Image (cartoon, rainbow, N blue to C red; front, side, top):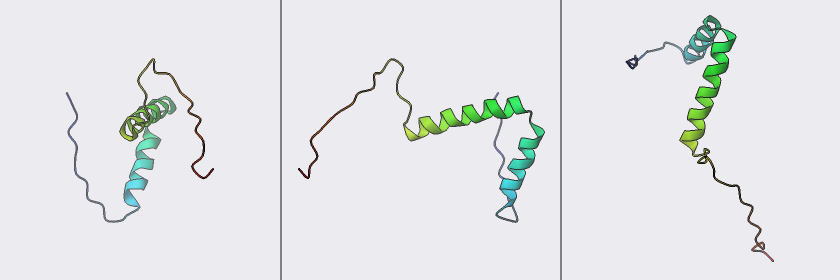
Length: 67
């Protein structure tokens, strides 16, 4: 079952960062380590940085336009 999101209204702009710090202090080091890589994978997928498995890297050498 998916956890429902809750809208939170803050009084100050720095309050969300302070709340994130307090939430991080409640977690263990292992939980923060796992969460970091989960969030990194989500961000890479969002930015399109993830390449399909088995794809090969290619290097393309072209003559510069100004020559």
